[in-house]
Length: 148
Image (tube, rainbow, N blue to C red):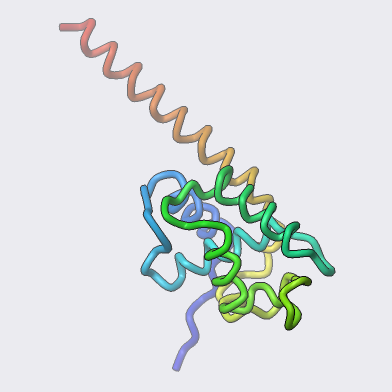
């Protein structure tokens, strides 16, 4: 059996922007790869090696939910649990200490260059591109109306 090609940096960026800014998702996507793109982006936003408290993880996930994803019907607690369940985060037995895991169940899906992405920059660039396209569309629409 041939293993699928890893998700490249460019594909990751495009799909993340589509998921977070264009999809209007409510809840986690059904597609396995898209779920892992979201999980990976959340972990890259956490981004700190070493131990983190539950509060620190929660603050970073709240930031991710409000500034990156804006996907409805996902809260930071559910997201944190999914990240632990899929192995992107590990925690000690009492849940007081978390660490970003380099070997989560979906990590093999991604090209190693994805790890160097600044997720906020990817989203901000996506927003700028969407705004640019809207302006161009509006300008074309306005010029057609003036011609009539």
